[in-house]
Length: 132
Picture 1 (cartoon, one colour):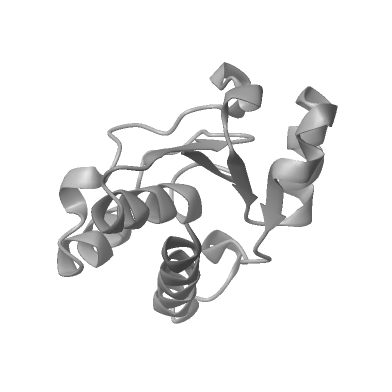
Picture 2 (cartoon, rainbow, N blue to C red; picture 1 turned 90 degrees about the vertical axis):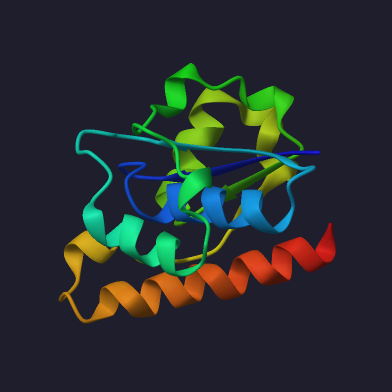
């Protein structure tokens, strides 16, 4: 099984989801991408993943959605509807593979929401892992 997580910058939500699922389900091929990656993965992400013993599963640099072969994934998780739209613009036949989690971008929220968003992703990853 191949799973792709997509967010805006591929710097928080999607790489966190990727790293957590890789740790939980090492036999599943997991990847992540952003619709507009431009910043490096922040230290807060590394701190949260280290706490979960998933830091070794964190990718080195953000990647752009345009370099991904979308048809090759079995499941594509979009963090917001705008990410689903970006995926569909590149791969209209991928619609049945896409799940939208509706997880907000922590970069546009006060700092105290960062850990809440991390915990929300962690819960969603557990649900996903239990369903595969």
